[in-house]
Figure 1 (cartoon, rainbow, N blue to C red):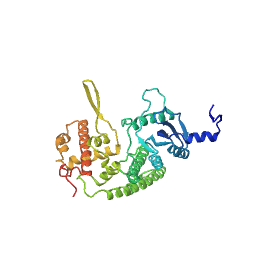
Figure 2: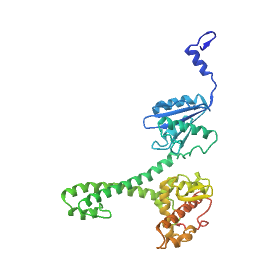
Figure 3: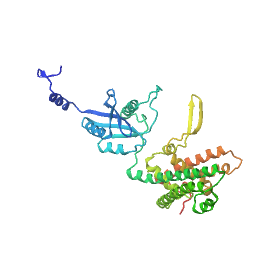
Length: 367
């Protein structure tokens, strides 16, 4: 029985005992975040992780504030996803050292059990290893600044609207095809629609007119955002690197200085070959596609333009003969374009960070 000077301890005594307890060196929190709740597994220093707890977001933030008074340092981590970086910034403001990590399958033993509790437990166990110095415990995602994130919203909204325009276009063509009418191109443009509408039945024209108006409205917004992005692009850039593509790439990368070497740049593009090696046997496979897909698409588009407009750029000059050979297999051409795009990404990093100038890289400039 817990006593104080020979008598039974009161609740006041217990609170005083807690208050004089030494502060823990650190507390680690593994977070499984959802829209309406946060599942948390806490580990105090190197002790066994505690059972998972469930909080609403306001409750969780108040609870975290109390944790700060109980440890010299509080660490936390959660997976990158649809909840973005708002929680990260709230935790940082409270003095928590938070990490946003790349999502992955946490059931490494293949037990076939995946719950919020097991995910939060796996995260805090990885966090413990990371804090102790094992930086390979998981992949940490770079958190953009609010300004970088806002700039990226514009380019991504344009991409979303462009896809929506494409979807509505296809919807109209599909409906026409059900009536044995095949159309190509932008059938919804004012001039094309005026020519098409009189040839349709009243019922079909009424339905398609709604779709055409929607496509035109979305198209107008795409054009406005395109003009906005192009006007923000740098005036000086390599020839064949268009204003729109270069600005989309810049907003996705956020800051070229985040990379310290060319291997990091190549890995971020996801255009490095996969490797299967065991003993004396090694097989190079398809590209990993690890990293930012939007960056990869932009670089591939630039690479095709370089073949035409920068024939003396070293990677292009090396493989231009094969790329222009009509008898060369299509798959081989794609692999060569990927290699050029990967090299281009590294050269753009060198340009942006001042390691080289365009003349040293044999890239012709727009001005």
